[in-house]
Length: 250
Image (cartoon, rainbow, N blue to C red; front, side, top):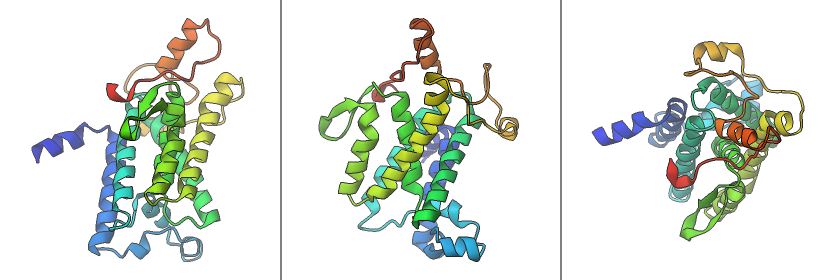
């Protein structure tokens, strides 16, 4: 048990709380402590009965059973792997910026879920984070099942097909990829590669709550260190979006 505790405490803070909630909420529903009916995002209940907790519970809940258990475990693994990699990689030392990314993606997914009657939001949010990681490390060669190897930029679409094969919904994965693309475009691509304005900015209260852990310019619009190094090496030109680390290095 001490080994499990040490492993759990070693997970970056924001990912750790997200991971814990994603385990606890389905367990509460499975044990019948609270009826799972209260966890789904039902537009009528949220908008007209003022059950304002539903967008939150729908983000963490997943109906675990004989037909869905493997899909749940696979996506729990994706959450742990790619959220931790982003939090300790591109967002290292900037927990407020990482939390804001999650909040931005979550709000977009909630709005889409209400419009499209998506009752569960766990997979879309995980996929949005995975998509951002894949774009920031797009030229890194990753390994998937059965030894297949390909560039990280294709990983979200490979996982979309994989989740569909094991019982997932293409819509959930697709919405996650689109939201992740929206964040990546507004945060990195548009202001840095295309010279546009910054549309996203982390609220100051998040910096007061989660201050940066080391020096540097705070807030969005700052590329990860690997991208800044690549730009310097290329004479200050466009950023090389393929910088990152291999899957086995972290």
